Image 1 (tube, rainbow, N blue to C red):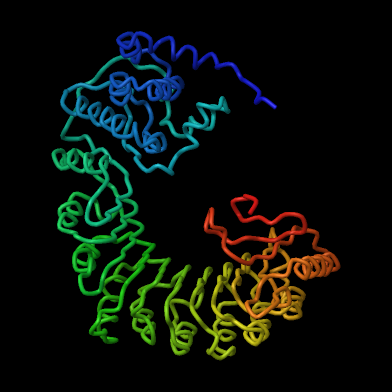
Image 2 (cartoon, rainbow, N blue to C red):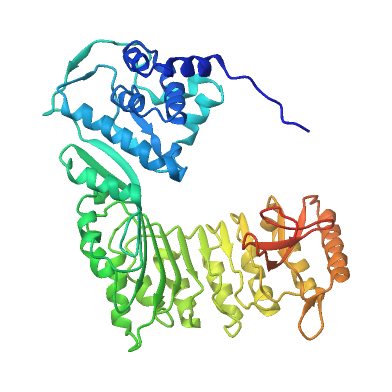
Length: 486
């Protein structure tokens, strides 16, 4: 069946017609109604009319220009960014500007404010967009006024910075060079800073150009013997609004490291007082030393993630005793092997979090029936639980059924996603038996229906090679979360 074709809207046709004469389009901006700016900007962007884009940046009647949402296409992003920055150059170089110009923030993050453009390109209600304007912005004001540099607040450029092997991609390198030459009139506001790989010679130079108090998320990957931390730590004191820290792929040095060293680095990384989310992934220096990290927390966490790390039972005990992790909303321990840990340890930890825990992830933890039976009372008291993932563990069908019957919050999840029970496997290599799987699926679905649950039930097993996500088995379809048949 052919897709239905919708003719271009009148405003789109008007924009295309105006752009046939770029000089006319630029001269018309002083008289152009504010509500026509976004559609004309989209048309100029699509047609790569650089001169019109420069002029529209200089006359932009909204406080924010979400340019990043339009820059996903790699081949055009450098050209569009250059046009926008040249437009700002023209504005800063002259002593007059359009009275209507209200631009305060150039938003360059790709995943922010996409709805702004969707409203104008899809013909939705315009009233939602006028909330982004200042009062009276919809009225054309063709007069121009003097630009008072002494009172003009610096323009904010909002970005995310990703350093890989000490370098930035082409368009961010161009942007940093542009900001360096105009740092007195431009504030570079980085919301997310990600650093991985070496060398890092240019990192300090770039960080000096960033308004560090704007950074909200920090992701760091480093080699212990050549720490990126040595470069970032001096700047941490200025990251006063940092609320999310991710540390991943930290390798153990050949000489080993002491608990004091772990504590020193943890105290430096966790120096900001507003950290609400801490994620430690593939950090191979925590074994028996998690308490050195926990004691450095300055405030209560909402999310704590320790994944694919080697931990000892004492580490989980310290986690259950730490004051700043006693009100977690999310706990992620995926890939932490707990087969030989006492089931009571995990039970105590979950009981401590029962009043606040909303998301619990225990995939690939080597848990057995004994662990799930021990956890059952604590899980049953987790009244706020909205998601519980426990794939890749050894759980039998009776224990799974008992878990679902006696954990009320699990029966309220929007979709039933559970691990394949042990009874579905056969042979010395534990291959999946499709007939048994179908029987267990039907039995589980019938049990949930008896409990008043009619939602879809899927059982998860191996990993999809196409999307690297888990494959789920249903009654009629074998699928993964990308909904491809496998």
